[in-house]
Length: 155
Image 1: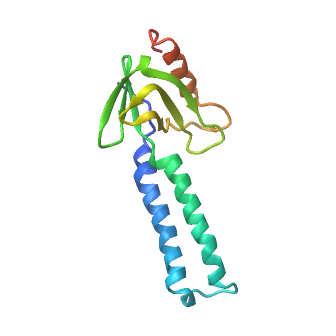
Image 2: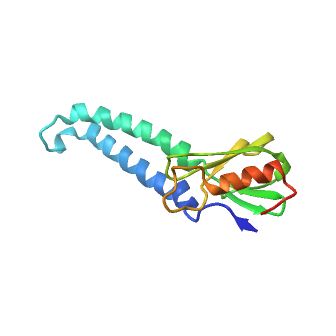
Image 3: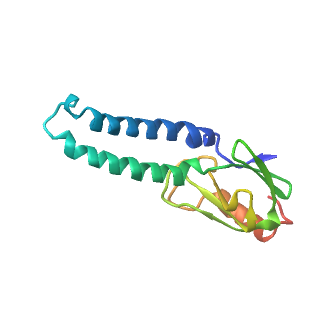
């Protein structure tokens, strides 16, 4: 079995979102519930709306880039996909294509399926980190693209 996911998958799926969202929601709530307790030159009543916007936008981005990630392993001609509660086996032949992020950290790879699975028509995972990555397509995405095109050859 080859683990394709980063060892940081659990951290980025559960720990980081809970910390970031919790901090921003907490600070934003404090700004609304006790605006007089904040000291400074600016008016907290104006800044708090910026925090509402940042909390909503940041939560959306964190959901999109972190909370949806799955753990992916490759065993023979099957992907083993896990969301830490359920595990699914998907044959290579059921993957239509592979896409990946560029200029983004953490880097992401998507597996697009020919037909819907329990996790939908595509899943996203974080590949293992690489030094100076992000400016080009992750090598694992290229390798997986080659595998789903010709599943008889496993590198």
